[in-house]
Every structure is written in structure tokens, then in C-alpha cells.
Image (tube, rainbow, N blue to C red; front, side):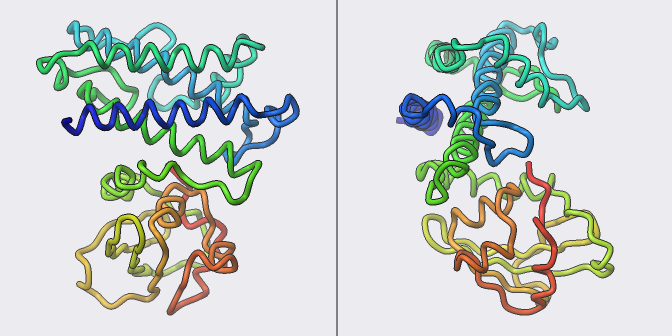
Length: 271
């Protein structure tokens, strides 16, 4: 099995796991606040259903040579949170069925693509992407948003385990897009070294300025702060889902050095 097929299967497994979980929820739970600020559980599901619809449309068009935005596609620089809410409101009691149906259609499309299709450019609001990149984007969206839903209802919820190596593969790209939470007290750059244990052991050195983050060669400069955590905790920190101080209190994050950094709410605004 090649890497693409493996990730398609992982995405299908993550979607099935989430679908089974959603079937267990009470009517009240669907309207419980999720870990995505401003979104209830049902809004996150609406976002995932809308995303599957968009991905299927843009990939289907892209492999035919059409890279124009599909009708109703998200546009760059436009906040799309309200689109997801309006979409799930229109769906009403068909929300879960639409999520499962649109997800199945996306993966059925991928299974029909041939070797000549994977590198063909497809529309994305942040620039054209090869068709195969939507496989990874969908897997990570499903895994992270499943956590957004489940962790709000069960604090012991974990990220889809098989997604962790994929998230870690994306770390350099994710770091290049991170923005620090504004904090007037952080007037000088801070160097933070991460030691990550568990599923994907890794070492990272990051330079945190007033509002940006950038990767540095490991060990190039002494760290102001050294952090140790497992792979899942690291991913959730990078995606702005965990704040450092609660992570320390809960024993998920060990910090050595300038502990004043922990006064900042979330280090990152999320991706």
C-alpha cells in the first residue's frame, strides 16, 4: 500500500470513528460549546460537512483542468465561521446524514483518481494545491475537529492516534503560519526548545518574537525555556488547542527556565 492509499484509509477510519461517536450524542450535547471558540458541536460538524463538499468539488474540477473557485467556495481573507453555522442551520436534522454522505463522496472520488491526477492543481483559498494534498488536509481536519468535539464533552478525549505522525510531519509548515498571542510584556525574543516524547519523538528549537514564531536549527542557541511533553500535547499546543499553564498544572507539560512565559494564555492563536 502506498502512502496516499494509507492516508485515505486513515481519513476514512477517522471519519467513521467520529460518526459512531456522534450517533451516541444526546440532543443537548449537539448544542454544547466545542473547543472551537464560538462554535457548538453541531457547528463543527457543519464545518466538516461543508469542507467535504468543497474538497470533493474542487478536486473533481481540478483533475479536469478547472482551477477556478467552485460555486460557494471559501475565498481568501474571508472569515468563514458564519458559513458553517448557516450551512448546518439549513441542514437541520439532516446534518449528520449530510456529513457522512459528503465524506463518503469525497473518498469515493479519491479512489477513482489515477496516477496522472495526483499532482494536478486544484483551487484552494490560500493558493492552488495538488490533488493529493487534500488527502492530508482532510485527515488532519477530521482528527483535530473530532478532538474539538469530544474534548468539550469528555476531558480525557484523545486525538486520533494514527494522525499524530501526520501532524508531526506538518510541524515546519504549521510553525511558519503560527502567530503569538499578543502580550505587551514579551518585549524581547524568547528561544524555546521542545523535547517531544511518545508516538513521534522529536526535538524542536523555536524563536518566539512579539507576534511570530520561526524554527531554528536545534541546539544553535541556548534556550530561554525548555519544554518537555508527549506528541499529542505538542500538537495541541501548536494548534492553539492547549494553553501552557493548564498543561503544566495537569502534568502534560514540563517547563524549565523562564516560567514567566506561562503567564501568556495560549502561546499560539491556532491554525
